[in-house]
Length: 308
Ligand SMILES: Nc1ncnc2c1ncn2[C@@H]1O[C@H](COP(=O)(O)OP(=O)(O)OP(=O)(O)O)[C@@H](O)[C@H]1O
Ligand SMILES: [Mg+2]
Image (cartoon, rainbow, N blue to C red):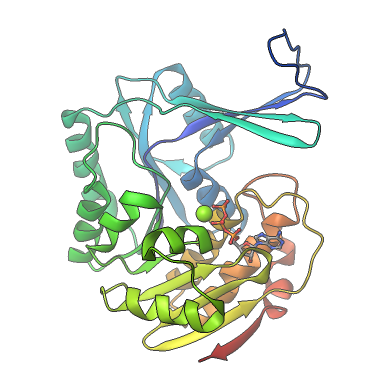
């Protein structure tokens, strides 16, 4: 079973406006409400390919109930810890071909709620093979929270895939997760400099491997992704496609990597699933969706080439 963590989920509210007028009343006839948060995108994609997946994290208030109902409706297994605060909303306003976003910080997690989560997590780890963690940490949790989760997973020999940025990524790396997947911006922020070309990417990945992270993946948008494992560097190159909506492609790539790793595949093969899921998601209007019927044929079209 793949355990997905969404510590700060959200109801994503998508307002489709033709035109946004500042300092005026804007009326909106088309609103799409979905259970969101990067970890839930990972979960939905895994569900699309019939992988065995269980979602956990924190949910609270009526907004939390909405998310639990949506997951039930989609047939997704979940076990969230209930908190006093209310799960947040995140707004995306589509107007004049632009996307303007307003993201709430979300509720603060108390010490007791964090402790309840750790107890639940330890119990769920017993059934898990792979753990994915996506996105930022909610308020109230210590900066070291991902570190604690990675250490607990390592004690039970579970592979931990960490997809976050900034300070939580820096702190998480200290506990040597099995895999990290920065995009190029996140890698530059982490290393303090832009990686120059393929050689620069490989050099950055090598430095990160020295910290004890086993599998480093740098996602490169439509160009695919670079993988680094056990001293080997390789690139997964998807064919050129007509992208419709690439939001959630990074999350879909995490789902593909988890899918491959859960099945015990070689890192190159797991990365090919990652690139296939990421690209298939970009070809769909929906966020966090891949067409299962296309997966195997599309994965064969991902070219894997060794570098350096
Ligand atoms: N425009 C695109 N066209 C085709 N495939 C894409 C496109 N954007 C992303 N992908 C696929 O998805 C993978 C991950 O995308 P990307 O590098 O953009 O991740 P990210 O920046 O972490 O995204 P996210 O916004 O979900 O966090 C890529 O390696 C690629 O396979
Ligand atoms: Mg990302």
